[in-house]
Length: 65
Length: 134
Image 1 (spheres, rainbow over the protein chains, first blue to last red):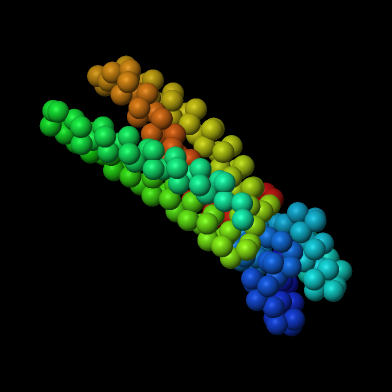
Image 2: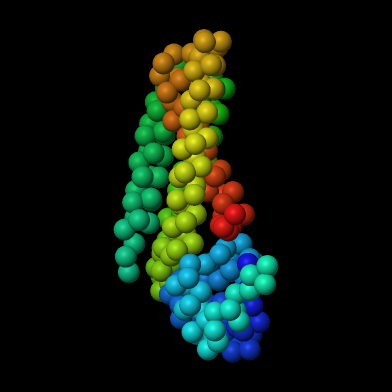
């Protein structure tokens, strides 16, 4: 699974720390997500998509799609 | 700020370091290489414990959660892997005991120390590799 968190974060001019605070995780988790080293729970994926104001599938992209 | 786990990690590290220092500096006979290696490993493990505690304190200080879903998954995976690897380590220790002259205390001490090292290495491995659904 790939994601476009870095891209959307840059669009909204959010730092990793800002995003981490908004979705209530550690900054390290955002770092892991952006490096594709972690697949988030559905809840976290949903929360991130809500912050960006887009559907989940816009942020998280499955490789088979 | 809930710093309970950080305080526990720091307290355990301090107790381990203090008892090791009592053991090491209170020895009447000369120190052999095996004991120096054990002491070195314990110091590394205590360093790991202090690093863990400092991370918790800095997280609490900056207002971010000390634990989230990623950190919990890393600890869960580390625990599962280290348990599995430790089983083989104990089999190896039993095999070694029949071939090398070792007291029961030495076997137990080396085994417990090895378990701690295995846990630390598994933790570092998962932190570097990340947690993905394979």
